[in-house]
Amino acid sequence: MSGAVVVGLGIAGGVRIRDMLAPLAGSPAEKLQVRGFVSRRSVGTHQGVSQISMEKAVSREDIQAAFICTENVSHEDNIRAFLQAGKHVCVEYPMTMSYKTAVELWDLAQEKGVVLHEEHIELLTEDFKALKKEVEGKSLQEGSLHFTGGPLKPGFGFPAFSGISRLTWLVELFGELVVTAAALEDTVSNYSKMTAKLLTRDNRPLTWIEERGPGLPRGKKINFQFATCSLTQIPPSAGGTGGLFMQDMIHFSCKLLGQVGVEELQREKIRILHCLELAEKIQNICQK
Image 1 (cartoon, rainbow, N blue to C red):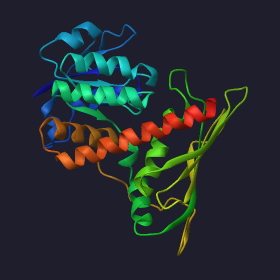
Image 2: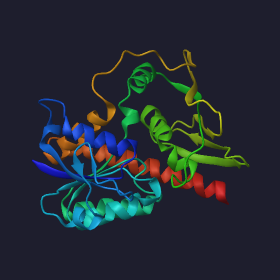
Image 3: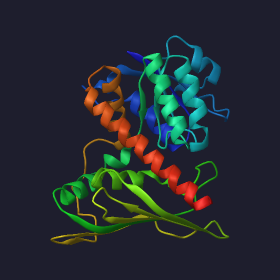
Image 4: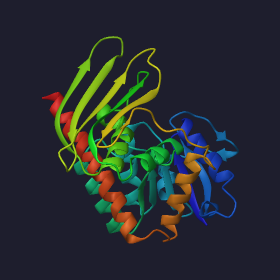
């Protein structure tokens, strides 16, 4: 068994505790046991689990892993604290707000001989799996992905980072990308619209739009033009089995047990760092 602590008691943190208390039977997730949670609020207990201080979470010998579920801007400090203590880390995306820092943290994890895992539940959704199957083997000519949603709370960072799950979709679907242009419309009343122009390895143009504001419905609009057809709606999909966070926890547990191959780990690391580097380039262009 590996003892684990959850840092941050928002929606994701509560789900992490729930899933560790009732893991999928017969899965590697059964090897994780929640030992406590850390929160800025004084809560006492949650789902029967006791609140502990950050200092105890980092120092206790019966805690080998941490789930970081805080706002994005505090990910880096929390990850570093647990890695320095020689503990495994599972963190919500984005890992950090800096490509260089992410590389440093991954090097630190390797130095300490522990697992650093960035959650990407958007790749586990049935919608994405159906879309990836539909796109496979087709020759892209041009495309766009337009996300809309309500305003973000403070602490989630620049739109290219807070919305990195959409960028991850594009990289998973079409491979390595290059940023050619980017712009941010930032007006009053919590409205913002970021537009990034990207190119595939075959020099096919992709546009990523991240639009947020009061009253905007949460959703994705796609328009992918292929040599043989066009795709303007995400294909319908059957319901999946098991919650997305549970699926991610099983994947993290497999890493802790050494059940994930070196090649798969390397592919995942390359994709995550590539997306963080793209997000940073988009931010830099927008802020010039």
